[in-house]
Length: 396
Image (cartoon, rainbow, N blue to C red):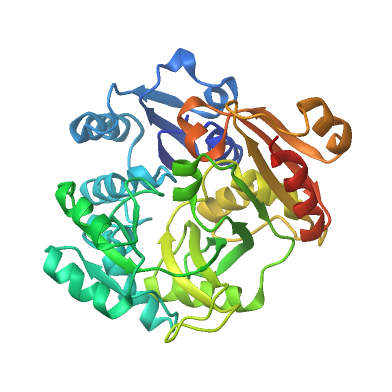
């Protein structure tokens, strides 16, 4: 099997995907914008060959790289980045090289454009916030007349919380239209709730080989704008209602042979037409693994190897790794250098040293969302998670 992995060096833990593929006998061919000498040694060992391109965003450069691999190694069986930023380009490359084991370019819009997702949620029986495609300020006022302030505006194909705004008044609305970026935007009614994700690895029939649930803060946007500390955790079990909605959603979207990350609101305030407190409401689908170190957190929470499960899905279309039932919570808490905290680094190590599974400085590009320093721990239950978060993030 010839597998082309786009940007295998970022995020840095993605070398694990390549490593497991290589161990399963695949020929792993990397294309990235980092010089070969800068690659992690683990990644170098996993790759059969690496093709450096100065700009991954230049389609012609990446096309030529895939063409070179195709000429040298024969038919490309799989091509993937597992990275939200490159999903559309991945699909275009698959289509151009007749690689059928993944999303095709003509169909990518349904999983990239937020405005296109609503139809598939509805078919799955999953309620979602009302949405308006931003056009004129008059049309926006009409939509707000229906749903009320505040509203959320974000790029139709945006990644994460980038260029997302919460509009609370007519003044905010006028500011937004005076500074409207030249990309398609959508406007959604505001929902009060926490974010839960349904994470899964799907086989070729859209059946889950692995399922996990992670509990996120209500707003990554607020974390970035207000310089809050990021805290979240992977739960020991998946809520059965979330499991049901997650499975229905992937079936409706027709997604298969992928690692997926589906986000839902869990209402903390009842919303007419959407649900009562505790109900789940669809937010958006992300047809790639959760960001940051979340795949590793799933491993720690469930005593498994999601990278191996994914590689087994690619090479055998089944899960080989058994479930052992040794489940717990895995929690992340970040700190920012600009603030002083009640408990020092030494205090945290003294109290949680036996639970810590990861502790490191974050790359500069991830600091706005994740903080400068992170602590990740294994804990028995949500109450212990709350105590840990308070201990790490309470500021002076």
